[in-house]
Image 1 (cartoon, rainbow, N blue to C red):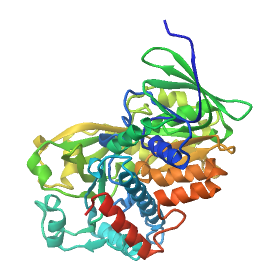
Image 2 (spheres, rainbow, N blue to C red; image 1 turned 60 degrees about the horizontal axis):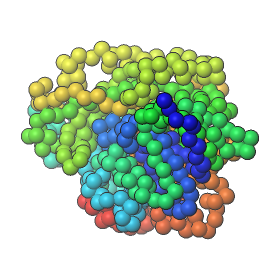
Image 3 (tube, rainbow, N blue to C red; image 1 turned 180 degrees about the horizontal axis):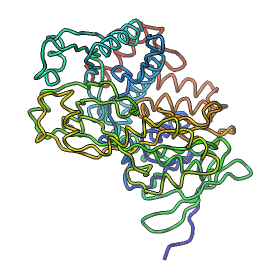
Image 4 (cartoon, one colour; image 1 turned 120 degrees about the vertical axis):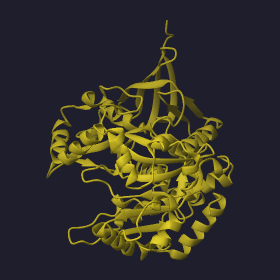
Amino acid sequence: MPDETIRSNSDVVLIGAGIMSATLGVILKELQPDIKIEIYERLDVAAAESSDAWNNAGTGHSAFCELNYTPEKADGSIDPKKAISIAESFEISRQFWSYLVQQNKVPSPDNFIKSVPHMSFVWGDKNVDYLKKRFEALHSNPIFADMTFSTDFEQLQKWMPLVMEGRNADEKLAATHMEIGTDVNFGALTRSMFNYLEKLDGVSLFFNHEVKKLRQREDKSWRIKIKDLSTGNTRKAYTKFVFIGAGGGSLPLLEKANVPEGNGYGGFPVSGQWLKCTNPEVIAKHQAKVYGKASVGAPPMSVPHIDTRVIDGEKALLFGPFAGFSTRFLKNGSYLDLPLSIKRNNLIPMLAAGYHNIPLTKYLIEQVRQSPKDRMKALREYLPTARSKDWKLEKAGQRVQVIKKDEKEGGVLEFGTEVINTHDGTLAVLLGASPGASTAVAIMVDLVSRCFTNQIKTPEWQAKLKTMIPSYGQTLNDKPELLEQLRKQTAEVLKLN
């Protein structure tokens, strides 16, 4: 028989033990050491969903190779704004992670980050022209100054020998190359940060605890009802601030919070699968993250890439992801997640977004219907000599893309991450997917500035932020000397090439 309700009080409650909650928890504890934090996670370990190494690309989304961050405008020119913004955000992550390593708050960087070149690779006249224009639009910016472009067959063979095996020298091919790319194991990094947090006074981490209700009280504080899944006990947590960073589980929790800022938001789940190489000889031939162009109608998370990974000290090779559709919002979720998320306030945006994204629906249906032969055909566009016996299919993570109200369209499907916070700054929610984990530090610093408006203005918080993130309050793309200095420093600390 379950015991009586347990009650607790804290300054901050973090829901979800992923990279976002870990990052926010560490930042807040550094800024205010006496802050009291409680963290609740439905599963029995940290980083088991979107932050897990096998459930995300681990690219260190720095916009070096992801073509979806540099759209081609109607006039044929390339818009580099999003790529520059994401690259700036990744530099912030590198600085913060370096601080954690230097202060011995996380173990050796070997556990979570490795140097792996980032490349974009295309074929055909139209795509080669696009990549050249993209290179020209990016290369003129200091943050992308190290990028190189080539159509030379021999140069491409040096950069990616496995990709070039079996190709003809007269094929129209092109690639860009960024030597300073990285592979990040966000699962390992997240668990390291939680291990650090758990040792600190005033931090409590609860696994197997599922949030059932959230209600704001008259004094603007929050009462959260939580079920201990291992004992059946109920817990009531009282707190001044709530962050919901539960990946695909964030939308249902936002709806439970019943705040006006959440009205009109919906979610569209997209699942994924990888082809994973099982042949060590093939794995050894490739040392890069090679991204291509997405199919028409494909979501950004489905941009195909042949991807060197280093997970728990072992080198791996993945291709994909292949998109799919499931009504679950989490890999470990319920098939009722999508239908139960449809409410009166988001019905019109969701229907409108569905109507405006028919190509996406068609693409997902085609992906679900793919046979093993179809998937190998897609792989051989990147690796012409690939053999079926060297690859096996693995399930990847579940993502929920944001749907929100739009005055013109009725509702739009957003690809990216979005932070929603209440006007009183007592609750914040992170929705969406890519580039997510790679830009977690910039996202959480922005969240702190929105929700802790008085504290962040204090000299103490300002000084500490500049200690953790030396470029805090500045942009790096217009300060090449500072950019070069910080890249060099972070590369040394993080043991990068």
